[in-house]
Length: 305
Image (cartoon, rainbow, N blue to C red; front, side, top):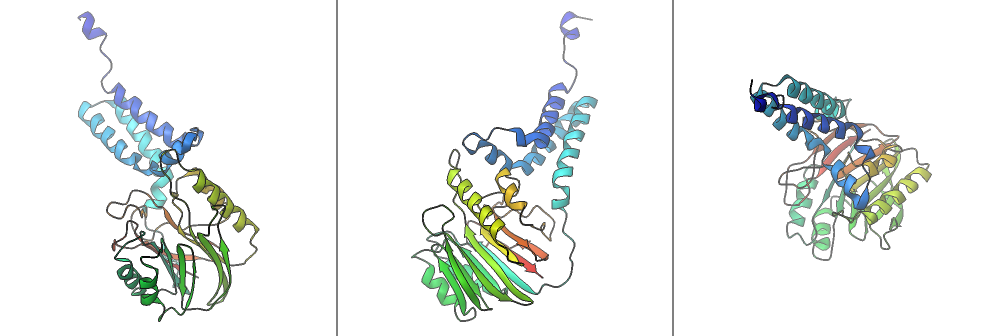
C-alpha cells in the first residue's frame, strides 16, 4: 500500500462531522451568544436545517459512507424531535365559537383595500391588521366598517369586530409611540381581552427595539388577570426565536392545522412564522396560514372556543 493511500481520510468523514455539527446546533442553539441579535437570527431559520440535512444525506449516499449515514440519521432524528409534531397537521377539536384573522398589510400598499376585502370574505368575527398608514387607512375602513361596526385603531394597528368592543387601551410597549392596543371584546361565552400588536422589525445587528417591546408585552400579559386572553398580530419574531420563550410561558399557540410549519413571511416563499395568535383561557380549534393576497406577509386565521 502506498504512503499516500494509507494517509487518506475515511470515506465521508467530513460529511459525517458536518451532520453531527448540525445535530449539535439543533440541540444546543440556546448556548449561542446573542451578540447583536445573531443568535436570534439563526434561531429564526432553524427549521431550515432540514435542507442542509437533506444535502448531507445525498452526500452520504453518494459516498456510501456508514459514518456519514449515521451522522445524517442522528441529525434527522434531532430535527424530527424538535419540529416533527409542528410539521404534521394539528388534530381538530371541534367547531369554534368565534374566528380571528390577522395580516400585515405592508405599508403604502395600493392593494390594502383588496386584502381587507379578501379577509372579510372569510367571514371572521375579528380582523386584526398591521401597517395601517395614511395611504391605506381610509380605504381599509371603507371596506370593513359596514360589516364590522366595532373597531379600534391605534397607530399602525387596527382591530375590526362584529362584537362590541370596550375598555380600549393604547400601548406603546416601550417604543415611544403607540403600536399596539388592548380591548375587551364581547365574544360568545364571555368577554375576551384582545391585544393587537405590531412589534418592531429586526435586521442584522438591530433587534434591541423588538426585544424591548417583547419584554414589555410579556410583562403586560403576565400582570393581566383576564380569564380569556388573545394576543394577535405581527411579532417580527419566529416561533423558534429564544426571545419568544418568556411569552410562550404565559400563552400558548397551536401548530398549524395543515401540513407544514405554518410560515408566514415572506409571502412569495415563506421562510419563518412571524405572525402569531397566542391564547390563555381559550382553546384554539384551528389555525391556518392564508394564501398570498398582495402583502409581504401571509395572513393567519384561527378558530377559538
